[in-house]
Length: 245
Ligand code: L34
Image (tube, rainbow, N blue to C red):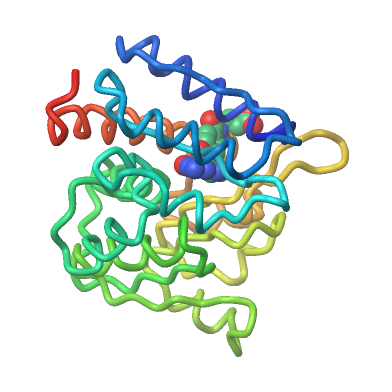
């Protein structure tokens, strides 16, 4: 909904990925002034539509829309974002069909790089429902020792410096500097910030961080594309779970 320029890029990338994978997709670019009832009516229609396996409302939604109400309206079986409370609860107990796309992408990057999370000090900076909280849970399921830090955390640098695996998801450009990172740590940058000069940068100051990190993800070209890839995975999974095609 609306005209958020970043959302337009992300949604376009998702449409393109669907085409590449051979997944049928429909995009509804609803104007800013669309009412909540109109949005809910569309979700209801898609919930019932048998040729639709997954539904996603790209966030953020405009201020007059209640995000929670919208998320709750999506059939949990079609909730390929895994934002619905039913799916959030399933992640908590470790019995889930869908994993939120960004944290799932982070886990995939860790796994594919041959890094074993077991017993590692994992520090997640950020506590959002979309990234921080589910990220912490996934790292915990992989037997990491997990600390969640946020804007009220005292002695943040002390905490981040203890991390073997550091996930930055705060949404502040260049927030994590090299001197906050342990030598050899795995640094995963979830942030995508648009600077005034239109350039993209992460939550990690790459230049200083790459000197100390053992492995580090770039922005762009790091976690973002993984988010899209995991959406494709969840959608195929949804088709199996729902018996939709
Ligand atoms: N409902 N809202 C819902 N589900 C999601 O999973 C998201 N997220 C986040 C924002 N809102 C959402 C995304 O889709 C972030 N996000 C996302 C998706 C794609 C990319 C980044 C974030 C991406 O493709 N990034 C590329 C290009 C960046 C650019 O050019 O702007 C990259 O290389 O990082």
